[in-house]
Image (spheres, rainbow, N blue to C red):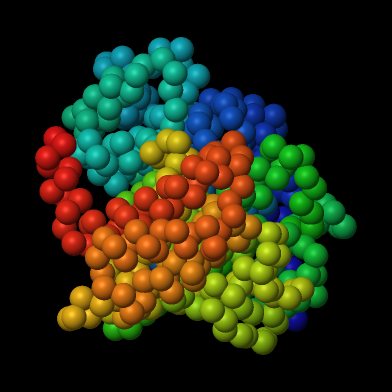
Amino acid sequence: MTAVSGAIRFILNGEDVSLTDVRPDMTLLDWLRLDRRLRGSKEGCAEGDCGACTVLVGRLSGDEIIYDSVTACIRFVGSLHGTHVVTIEHLRGEDGILHPVQQAMVDHHGSQCGFCTPGFVMSLYGLWMRDPQPSQAAIEKALQGNLCRCTGYAPIIRAAKAMGDYGQPAGDPLLAERIALTNGIKALADGRRVEIGEGENRIIVPASLDDFAAIYEANPTATIVNGSTDVGLWVTKFMRPIGPVIFINHLQELKRIAENDSEVRLYAGVSYSEALPVVTAHFPHMSELWNRIAGEQVRNMGTIGGNIANGSPIGDTPPPFIALGAKLHLRRGEHRREIKLEDYFLAYGKQDRQPGEFVESVTIPLLPAGEKFAVYKVSKRCEEDISALCGAFRVFVNDAGMVGMARIAFGGMAATPKRAKAVEAALVGKPWNEATIENAVAAFAADYQPISDMRASADYRLLTAQNLLRRFYLETVGQAQRLRREVA
């Protein structure tokens, strides 16, 4: 019998918090501003895009607290059990002066109207703790999820480059708290399940992965919340009820990454940020895509399992994973099964997942030597935007110059992530040359009948998919780089 606690327990700045009455849809931002009167975190967009509500959430990784910048507007209070939440009000320098990040922002005129400033400071504080003298590329990446309408960003970037001159992480007054905080968070991980409320107001925080499997099997209509980057918008934008909710972001068993000589296995709770080093090492062609998924805060929250499980036709990870031949591991109670990832998506809003069954992990085979692979994301903004379409291409060309294998998958072109099997058939057995490519592009119309929506028209999507195949071919034969040099 699993022991049960009746409180969500975490640390807010320097204060122990124990909540026994909290709604499943209570966001961290609303709780901070309305219940705790901590109003430095602002609501700008309520969908995780603008970064004005950015705070840091610390979690244990081994014996160390890892701090992630997150958007409080779509982070639920129920997901905070066993964490340390740091808001702008807690920052301070030595002897009560401004924190180095804050002073750098003042001296370099990084704030004008001030509405977005606390979010920028918190994002930069998270970066400063990791690297007090970051490169411009690292700064721009850390600030992908922060929007400012006043400064033009240049003063903020200058402040970020200089913040290490104002102080180093070793002198951070908050560092002195870390030992006590680490012990405090360890004490919160007492092995008990948390249960609060009843009916639609019920919150469950499982004690372990096995406990979660048993709970979900018994409560198959409950909403599973891991990163909340999708479910958060159900609440803030669509006013949808989400209870009862099972929060699973704390389960270390779902944060595992397993690697061997032939494949990588990512468990469902691994965030985009946590997966990045593995993706970069084994699938370097996916690095650009990975760094264009939302902003830093959302990449810290969003998970691989969530991106797959919700079945969105515009999810960024399914197309490349399908092209690589990924396998999906599903679990219901003690029963596990394995399917091809491409077979998981049945129709719009419908997946091959039984009541009480959840995505446990995905296994991605490594790219065999000699195969060509690329993935392209097309969106209105370069960063922090949802794909209009996302295409992944994988081919093997033998020594005779003939296509021996082709796997092409797209998101945003159909009701589900889907392979372009007619295009593949038009390539296999043919020479890898321009004539073959031009013959194959016509087959896209047999594979996809895209829709027109706010992100792109059907005609644009179809033409872009065709042009991406052309681009992939040119890159594989080395012409794209030459053409770019000539244009420049």
